[in-house]
Image (tube, rainbow, N blue to C red):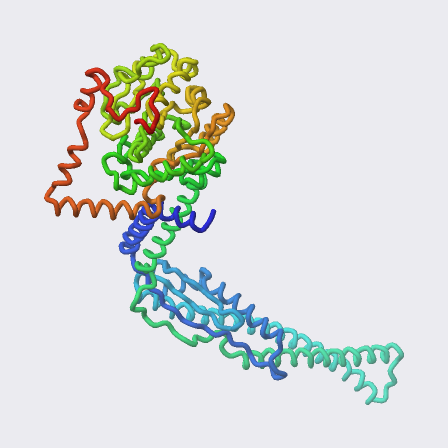
Length: 572
């Protein structure tokens, strides 16, 4: 998809994107404006450790960070929260508590969110105090427990030392009295001296460890310090009505833009002439913009508004058809479509009008014998027509069946009564003779045929034409239908000149839309300047159907400009 196609898609679905943004933004605004405002109070805590006399080590930095993460979790434990609730005389702490350790630091940021700003501030200040008190109490309990263990061990070792010293004094008194110790007594004395030395070494180690614990307790200080207490907030942190509304509107617009692109991706209808050319493999000869948004009425815009840019699009189609086959002029042109309702009859009528306005005697033939509509477009009767002319013998006078229209040089041969076998009639030898006879009456024959995919009438008639124009409706004809229609015509060796895209919406038509606005505004201004004279002139052009039907009903009136069989174009 090219950038231009992206822009066209956005322009096409701009209304949906705007609606999505408005709905999302409006709902978010209502919800945000009616939501309870939430206030946030914040305090900062610093984790402290005793300094290492040998200097700061990397392992101590990692330990501090991990310690900060541990404290961040311990701040919101149940004992701490229960104590805070008791201090503040609350049933429980219902405020939202967010503990955020600052990365690569020993700082913890504590956020407390609550609809009541005073309560949020109180919790933010009391929570660290309670945690610090409980933490110090726990640490003191651990130190006291350790000291008690050491003291018990020291007392036991001292008792062993005293006992060993007492026994050694007995042996010493025997020696002092001049008694000689036996071998067994000497060995026992040696064992007591060794035990005493070991007891004294153990006592020294226990005393040293106890002193280390006491020094650690003395140097410990506060593990957690509040470096920035919370202050009562004055502005809520949410809801941010404006920001939320803008974000929701943007997301709504993006979401529906994605939906629009998905719809376009899944939409396999022909939209523009380049799409039709790509799908069918045929040149795009016409780009016919829809006259009014949502207007699918059969309008003779080429006759009622000859200076309209929409009429100019039919003139462009006429010129493209003329240049599509320079070696063999197109005198017998058939228009068909893939499916019913794609505007081929309206296109055929307006194309015939601009051909006639170009000075060519033109006969518009309605060969859609199943659902004829051209007589309705021109407001003429359908009492007689093609089916009646086919009953005439070869060389018969066709003038009673040709009805003159309001457009100079344009005659209509309507379909006539509906036959039971349209395909057989259109493929008959007599139909070929009728086409040749009609060619003697006019310079150009334009045939409106049934859709190619619905019946075989178009394929039967296409082989007798100088050229065939395939009409597709923008944003309605599916690509597969257009492709099958083109392939079906080519299989019967029809000279398919190209494809014309009909009813292109304004939003996809580019400059035609601005031409239309200019033309309409200029026309309204001219009407007001002329005091309604131009409206009267147009009203005279739009002849009622009854008035147009009277000459034909009276005997098939044909204007004198119609070329009679046997005469040349120059004689006419």
